[in-house]
Length: 444
Image (cartoon, rainbow, N blue to C red; front, top):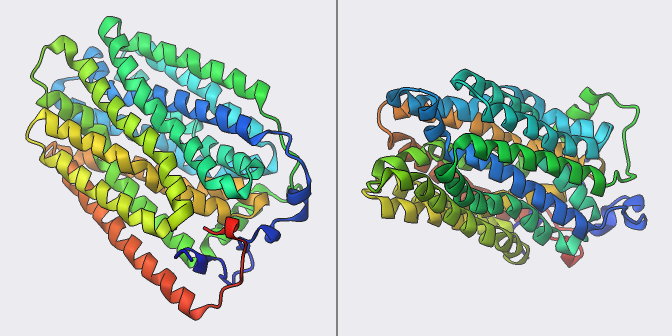
């Protein structure tokens, strides 16, 4: 029996038992309009396109800022500010996208992101100065909220026994984009310019929007048609806070992602400082390094999802968090380019396991009629960290470029300590609360 099983008998009425029999009868008998394998394919592709585009912007932002005339001493500060800009709008709206999806249309919420990305990267490509680039990144706040809705739609159509693997594969779309994108982006920047690269991302994003519009279908499902958005939002919050393990998972997830976001925006700058080769080869060096890290994450993310299905997710979390803490510390202490590159790739082997584990847990815990809104709430710790982390890192970088990496390692260590504590909490719950027998495929 896995350590996650005590989560099932929580007495709160709004948290469903994770037995397949607890699923509403309509969800058991109706045939989904979407084939889960088709959804898995298009949602993975959407993740590839999105992560590739934003990955280009993150990887080559320092070079682009130089081309826009930003003084070298101000580049670390602007990197942190621009990395956080989209979350000024994105954070307040984030919980509403899932609620609006449940209330009106999941498909509309999903395709909206791709079309806005097309506009965003067009504006970024033609930015004459850093202020217009900041406006383009501000538009990123209207892109958020699609991932949770896609995972909710995928979870509805996917057999329970394949849910962990499906979530892992869908989540791998983002590291796949991160792996392919930087390498290709480095070649494009080297041959042409950052502007050409960003405009290409705009075209791909718009085409992805058309593809999603044509392929996915709105499913018939239980809706609170007469409920107001604020009522649905409060219901989603109640579903989360009713479970002590879920609420603590949110804190753990924030600490882990805060550690990542403290350091990640400054990786290209540190690579640039430790690079001593020909200047013309710098973009491809940055791109190749981030590509290798992305490949590592793309390969291991679905494997972590499957491992969580087999051995239990409380056992996979400490493994991934330990490696994350060690990797961030190693980046900050790297004396030369190769040790830094090795640490970056090493983190890629484990980072995807954290996201996959948390999302799979919440997908199984969420009531079907509010799954999208709850899964979008699950993104809140990550999105909040992407707002606070880069800004905090920008302040620390004024002291030393390596300071954000040290702080990030401490945050990851805190998440690791909390993971062990939660595992102990689960054991205590198992000793106190008698478990209701459930089917094997429904176990966390």
